[in-house]
Amino acid sequence: MAADWLGSQVSINCGSTLGVYQGEVSSVDQSSQTISLRQPFHNGIKCPVPEVTFSAMDIKELKILDLGTSREDVVQKSSAPGGHTSEMLASPQQQCSKSSGDKHSEVPGQPRAFRRRHNSWSSSSRGVNQVTPKKNGGGQRQQRDHECFGDNMDDGLDTDFDFEGNLALFDKAAVFSQINGSDRRGNGARSRGTPQEQMSSQYRHDENILEAKPVVYRQIDVPQPGAQEYCTDSGLVVPSISYDLHKRLLSVAQHHGLSLDRRLEMTGVCASQMALTLLGGPNRLTPKNVHQRPTVAVLCGPHVQGAQGISCGRHLANHEVEVILFLPNFVKMLDAVSGELRLYSKTEGKHVASINELPDSPVDLIINCLDCHENTFLEQPWYRAAADWANQNRAPVLSLDPPVSGQGHAVEAKWTLALGLPLALAEGAGRVYLCDIGLPQQVFQEVGIKYHSPFGCKFVVPLHSA
Image (cartoon, rainbow, N blue to C red; front, side, top):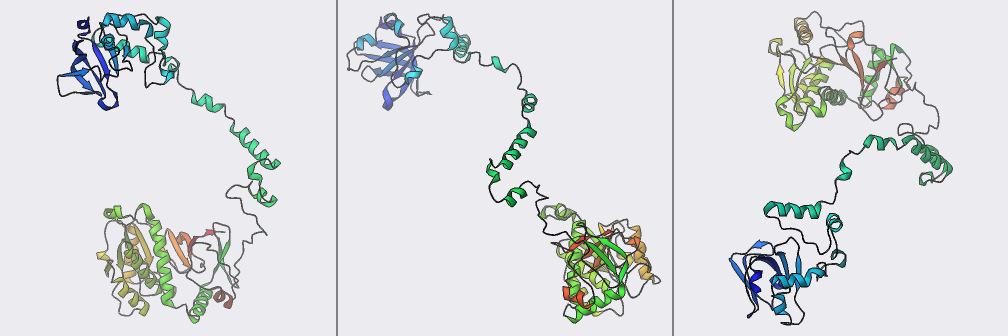
C-alpha cells in the first residue's frame, strides 16, 4: 500500500496561494491524510528545509513524475473535501490501474488543444497505454528530450537555400516596365496630377528640369577681350580681360564704396576657404585630429597681393592651421599691408622676416603672394631667396592674383586664384579658379562689360581653358 509511494518523484499543486512543490516521497500517512516530500523544490526553487509535509486538504493536484516508468500520471483531488482522500493516497499500483485508461484526461487550467497533444514519434510508435521502460541518469533525460523535440524537424535543413536562384526568378526589368506602362495608362497612383506633372515624373533626378528656353552659355561680353577664354563646369564662357580693364573695374568699385579693405577681406575669406579644401577639409581639420594640424607657408611682398596673402593667413590661423608668414621688414609698406599685419599679429600665426627662419621640411601648402602687377622683384635678393625656397620645398603652391603672362612667374603654381574676372595667365599658373570679390553688376556695366554671375551658389569656381 501507502509504502509503495516511497521513493517516487511527484509534483503537488497546492493552488495559487501555496504554489507547486516537487520532490521525492519520504512518507505517506493514510490515517492523518498527509504526505511528505524529501529535498523539495518550491516553484522550481530548492526549499531551505530538507522535508515538507502536506495535508490532503491543501492538495489540489498530485502528478506522479517517476514511479518506476517514464510516463506521467495525474491524480486529481475531488471537489468535495475529504471525499476521495484515501483513494488519492492509495498504492501506486492501484493508481496506475485506475488511471491507465485516463492518461490523457483533461487537466484543469490547460487549454483543450494541449490536453491530448502527442509527439509524432510517440503517438505513431506506441499505444496510449504502452509504458516506456525506465532508463537511469542521462539516458532517461535524452529519451524525454527525443520525445519532445525529435519530430524530424531538421529533415528539411539538409540543403542550403538557393538565394541566387530564387533572386533570378525576379525579373526586375519586367516589373519596372509594368509599372511604367501602368503610369502611362493612368492605372497607377503615380499617374495622378496634370499631364505636365506626369511627364516630369519620367525624368531622372538630374534631368527633371523643364527648360523654358535654351541656355545661353556666353553671358559675359567684354569690350576688350583678352587673349584667352575660360569656361565653368556648367559650360558658361568666362572671357579674360586686360590688366588695364581690370584696373578700371577696381577703380569704379572703389568709387561706389567697395574699398580696398573690403576687397582684401573678401579675397582673404575665399582664398582661405579654398586652401582649407586643398588641405583636406573636414577629413583633416577635426577636433580629434589636433596632433596633425596642417602647416601653411604664406610668402608675401610689400604690395596689395601681399596684403591679400596676410588676410588669407589670418583666416587660416583662426581655423587652427599652423601658419608661417614670410614678410621682410621693409622700410616702406602700404597702409593696407601694415593694417593686415597688425590683425595677423593677434592670432597664433608665426611671422618671419628671413628665409632662414622658414622650415627645412616640406609644408602642406605654400601660398605665393610675392608677385605684383605693377613691378617685379626678380632682381632683389629676398625675392629670389623666397622663390628658390618655394621651388625646393616640394609643397604644392597656390598663387593669389598673379600678374598677366609675359611678366614671368618665378614660382611654379599648381593652382591660381583670379579675382572678379581672370587675366590672360601664363601656363605656369596651373589650374585657374575664379573668386567672387563682391563686385556689383552696375560696376561691370559702367566699364562696358555685359555681366551675368557665373558663380551660382559658390564664391569660388574652377575655370577650364575653352
